[in-house]
Structure formats: C-alpha cells, structure tokens
Length: 501
Image (cartoon, rainbow, N blue to C red; front, side, top):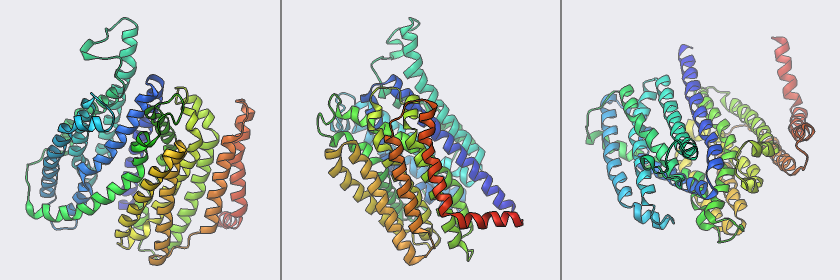
C-alpha cells in the first residue's frame, strides 16, 4: 500500500507541475497577442512547430531507452547514465552544429531572409533541451519528484520573466523615457526574436541548477551499452516523428500552403498566427487529457493483472468521454468570454469557429490514449508505431489537400481526421487482440450530441448580459440531463451502493 501511495503522490506532483507549466505557457498567448502583431505570432507558431519536430530528432528516444536499460537489464545504472548522457551530448554537438551552420539556408527556405540568427538561436534552444533530457529522466528514475517539478517550474518562471522583460517592460521604459532604444542592443522592432531569446536564456540558466541536483557525470561511451540502446531507440525515434507530425505539422506548414490573399488584408504568416492562437485555445482540452494521463497510466498498469480489468477500463473510458464532452461544450459556448479575456489583438476571433473541431480532435486523442492500453499491457507496441504512422500520412494528405481550399477550416479538419482515423484503428485492433466491453454506441451518441451542442452554443447570438451567459451555458446542463437520463440505471446502482454502505 505504501508503494502505491508513493506512486500516486509522485504522479500528482509530476502532473501538477506539468499542468501548471503548460497553463502558464498557455497564458503567454495573452502577452503575445497584446503586444506583438499577427505576423510575429505567426512566426512564433511556425518556428515552435519546427522546434517540436526537431526536438524528437535531437533526443531520438534516448529518455525511454535510459529508463529501459537502467532497470531490468542487469546493468550499472550510473554507467548507463554516464554513457547515455555522453552519447546525447556528442550527438547534440553534431546536430546542433549542423543546424547552426545550415541556419542561412533554412532562413531562406522558410521565408525569413536575413534572419539566419533565428535558426542559430533555435539550434541552441534544441541543444540545451537535449542535454537536459537525461538529467531530468534521472531525477524521475531516482524518485526525486519534487526536484524534477521544482526545476521545471523554475525554467517556466524564468521564461515568463524574460518574455515580460523583453516584450513588455523594456518597451514601457523606452516609451517613458527611462531607457533608450538600442540600450544593450535592444531593438523595438524585434518580436519573435525576443520569444526565442527568452526561451534560450531560461534554458541556459537552468542547466547548472539541474546538473547540480543530479550530480555531474563521467564522460564515457561504452559500446556494449550503446549498441543495444541504439537498436532500442531507433523505432522510438520514428514513432516520435510520426506522433509529432500529427500534432505540429499543420502549424508548421499552414502559412506555406495558404494561397496568397486567401484572407483579404492578411499575409499568410499573419493568418498562421490567427490559426495558431485558435489551436492554443483548443489545447485547454489537452491540459485535462495530460492530467488524466499522469493519473491513469500507473492506474491502468497496476490493474492489468486483475481479471476484471477490461470492465474497469471500459468504465474509465465512459466517464472520461462524458466529462470531456461536457468540457468541450463549456469551452465552445464561452468562446466569446474567452475572446474578451484573451487574445487581445483584433481579428483573432475570425478563426474561433474552428475551435470546436479542434476540441473534438483533441478529445479523440484522449480516447486514443484510453484505447491504447490494450497494446501496452499485451506488449504489442508495434501497433502503436503503425497506427501513429498512418495518422501522420492522413494528417499530411489532409493538410496538403484542405488548407489551400478551406484555410483555417482545412487545418482544423486535418487534426480531426488524423485522430479519428487513429482512434478507429486502435479500437478495431484492440477489440481483436484484447476485447474490452466499451459502451461504444452510447459513447458515439454523447460525442455527436456534445459536438452539435458546442456549435449550437457557439453560433447562438445573444447579448453579453448575464442572461446571455446563462442561456448559452444551459446547453451544458441540457447535455448532463440527457446523460443522466441515459445513465439512470448506472446512477441508481451507484446511489444504491452508497445507501447500503
């Protein structure tokens, strides 16, 4: 019992730190849309999609390999750590140097002429991230959850501080006459540069702290450890690339696939900024799913040997769908309120109509996570690779086909289509290899009903009074009443058990 309590406590710490960090980063969109123009926000969207993609290449599955070979392989964990960290530092020097030297070419390719420095800074950000990956993994392996969470939060707070300093406070000091433009090389006309620099400073400053917490390592490249680790990590690299393609490729390619003057008065990069902001709003669903993953993953594995686990997994899935469906309605019907709070720039609400589609896409991703338990407990993880790869191909085909024709809607549909296909494939093969009695028909009804109510509330034109707020949010109550009616037998049984107890 003490082991389970310890695991649950650490899960809560990891989950809370991750959700808090993501929430703070999410709130940064308020700063960007208030103080930067849409083209800068578009640059931020595209460059950070590139960073997310390249981060998989820089770490190439070594975190998971480190966990695998530090436990259950009869190897000295310290020796594995030294070798893994040494290998990652070596490969980071090679990859980082290559990206640094290729920066002028990349700047021209991605339409940032004369701004090669952006991609040199990108190379440094990726390099700092990569050399921190294994120390952070060691903190987790050593059950030092508070040290891990503390380092992550310090990194996020440093990032926020430098963003505020460079984007908000310095311009205010200049406009108030307290500082001259050009002081310490500061340039008022920079935008995405300061987002990257804030990230770079925060990552660079956290390295000594993390290494102090973990302890320094001895440089060692043990071939007997590297060979099997390399073999183990390569499939993870391709799985990661396929997964990040599904998540980020629409943001990376949007501005390059959108025809000129598709949206009058907006450049393709400015339109990409609006599109990326809508994605940020939909990621509210992802925050909930991330919290669920931290709590559910150890729970799922802990119950895998129980003969009643399939029935338990089905109940968890059903509750998850009901909760997230209600959340989808709540976000969709209150988008006008969210728009009032942030983003602050004009025109961002022009793409809000795609948010319910994106919310449904991320909800399906959460369902996929629930479904994926079958190949995790049966050691058939090869299905994960193939399903993710199919999702990546579907995503690419949809993006190249739909974005030039439908713009924002095409980008949103690519996300929805990708996760719908992945969910359907995972369900189909899961029921063949590890049958779980999901309430499939009823779940589909809830999803379709929630999606319909989300759009009904979004398009419902009411004033901004308390009456309008209550009228829109009554759709959430309507959904829950319908769920209560359909679930009356389960609720009766639950209330009956409580009464007996």
